[in-house]
Length: 100
Ligand SMILES: [Zn+2]
Image (cartoon, rainbow, N blue to C red; front, side, top):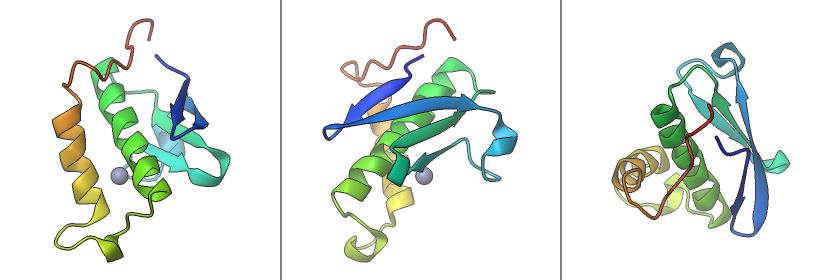
């Protein structure tokens, strides 16, 4: 599983941590100031891939200053969930899942 991803020119580390260290109901989170993405290590590889993509989209929207306030009829979380579903099966997005 990947441990680093470059998003808009900034290297972000990806750490796999116990779910109990994440917020309740969360399988992942981004610490924007530290350029760190944290993913639950209790997920199966396909779930990790989806959560990594979800958190990458959070970083992109944050960097592009796309917020709930400047979207019309959808909040950023809903947008990210829909984009994740749409993108997770695109062949060019090849987040490796071997060796987990
Ligand atoms: Zn989210």
